[in-house]
Image (cartoon, rainbow, N blue to C red; front, top):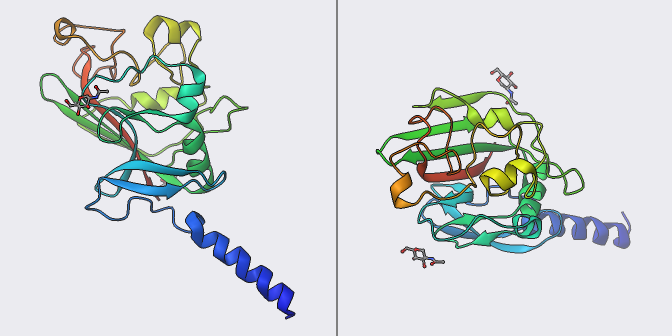
Length: 219
Ligand SMILES: *[C@@H]1O[C@H](CO)[C@@H](O)[C@H](O)[C@H]1NC(C)=O
Ligand SMILES: *[C@@H]1O[C@H](CO)[C@@H](O)[C@H](O)[C@H]1NC(C)=O
């Protein structure tokens, strides 16, 4: 091999090790966050981690508004240790480059918890409206319905009629089976049905959720 070719091979391998070769972003189980380099645009991001999973959506305190425009849903908003949205562009890059599991956890105001894990999670490019690609093999824990599955094949939108009616950017259909980016419930909405608050159909009736978390993990 000529020196030039060897240098080239070395350069390509070095590139791989810089954030490309290790999709196990939150591998340090004790860490609450990790510094990552997104696989395509090489953007440096600090992401929340929990038990080895990378959290890309979380509603916990209710003090960060999720009524945001396209650009904000694209680039992300919120707080690493609190209510957070990673951003669709990073989510596209990661899920497009590496096979990822998706885990959604939720809790109701009456203290019930539920969990859904999908064996594959991928979204398309911005040009394709970050469409949610179909995945199968959902595992449910304390849930009767894989509500998120009802959103496969749908485009993300922040200003469609459903987005305007129920608020928040989401893979809105007609309109939802779950709407985890909708409004965080106010005190007086917590013990009654609130279709415009974040919820998961048939989990605790149509009562709004107290907590939601969407996380990815390398397959
Ligand atoms: C939201 O509430 C948490 C917990 O009280 C706090 O740590 C955080 O700073 C708050 N964030 C905002 C944006 O007010
Ligand atoms: C779903 O499970 C079946 C059977 O275990 C397996 O063959 C298939 O590859 C899985 N699909 C995905 C997307 O993981």
